[in-house]
Amino acid sequence: MPALTIKNIPDDLYNELKHVAEQHHRSINSEVIVCLKRFLFPNKITPQERLNSIQTLRSKITPDIITAEDIDQAINEGRS
View 1 (cartoon, rainbow, N blue to C red):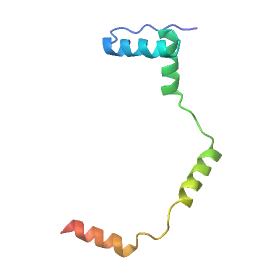
View 2: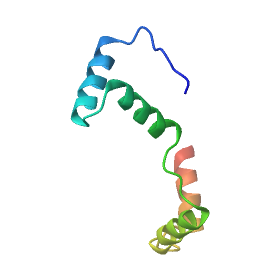
View 3: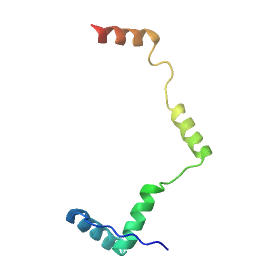
View 4: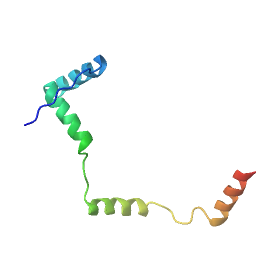
């Protein structure tokens, strides 16, 4: 397995990393790996899950709240 050396870590970053590692009962090395995985490989959702989320959001939108006239009026007010 490859190894990585990180140099010149700011003290505040190192101290926070150490604190978080202690809270999670991990070594600093393990905590760094977890942080990197969370950042580089965020939770991916399937296309179907994304579609379901979009459909749920769309169902909460009330159609025709803003009319074309409202948009035109807002544009015209912004130009004055």
